[in-house]
Length: 287
Picture 1 (cartoon, rainbow, N blue to C red):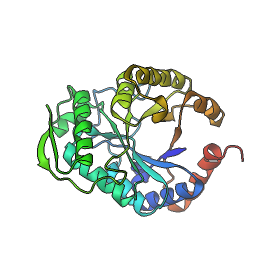
Picture 2: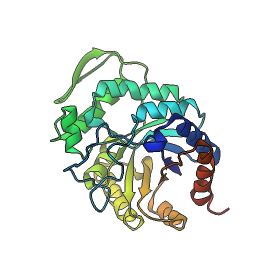
Picture 3: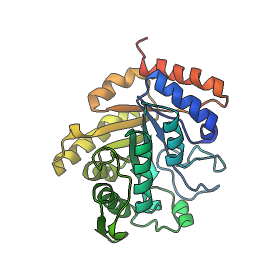
């Protein structure tokens, strides 16, 4: 069980991050997830792909922390719980900088970090960052390949359409043999294909419980098509509905991590009971 509750609104406050992170570790959650938007706008023309009405639920004026910095803070107040971006919008960033920052977080967390990435959906956000919205998927693919080169090689060289570097040294390296686990986010067939061909797992967000088996079947088909062992992948989902009664079916479908999404209470002394209640519902439903 993972918990996606940090970085937004009250979850962006350091006292709440500390309280939620330490309580989640104590209650047996496996991983803390933190998402990203650099930019929100009041009246977006872009459709949000994870809700029926096409609108993101987060107000445009809400505090939304940089996920790598928020997870660095969470890493400093915990010892065992794993950490993941869910997701970082990779094509909006410089891949050399993100490779450095991700490896740094992995080192500071003693090897607990997984980089979750996605291609993004907001044309307004890309425009504000002066990054082309068109071909963002191909840009993401190339960036990941370049970043893996930086993590594995020293010095490292890469020549692509969107980025290039020659004989550079970017350190530190990730702790797990020059390799950092990467999961690909998104619910489309293209995202599932990229999870198989580029990453170590998939993170589906706001998926209806009834739709999970079909999405996992697409993932399995892509594994067969590309000669990948399905069991090599981590398969995490955050549901748009569902209850603990769905857990056996989700496990049977191949889900390795169910991510609970929630907004923490505004008072730090209420955070631990809130996490404990989530744990009783999802982590230890048999109690």
